[in-house]
Length: 131
Image: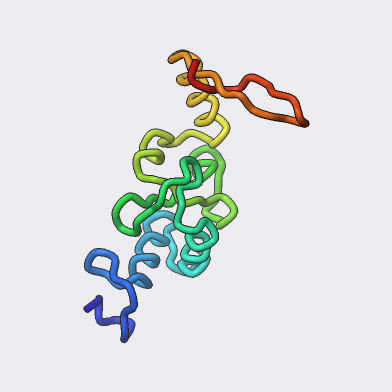
């Protein structure tokens, strides 16, 4: 079935066809439907994976379109400031800039006793990995 607005529907997201779903997300997130195709293409470029965790995103279930730098902190609605993320991750990030969010994650991991080993230039350095 589908919304009936776009003729033949290949994929359904909830009660909307995929095209209408991306238009709704575009409007909800950027206040315009003009860039819905760029937003859809961003999802495809990310291969349907969360920008932070790499988990599979399912349209209409766990997907959120995130502003890397929130609008209220000087970010824009331009495509280079948007990324697809898991809904739980976006909820945790809330209105933080990406750098602030990642710093908070690192502090949590450090506080909980995690330390990661990371190879840089052939040598191992401490980052965050479970001790």
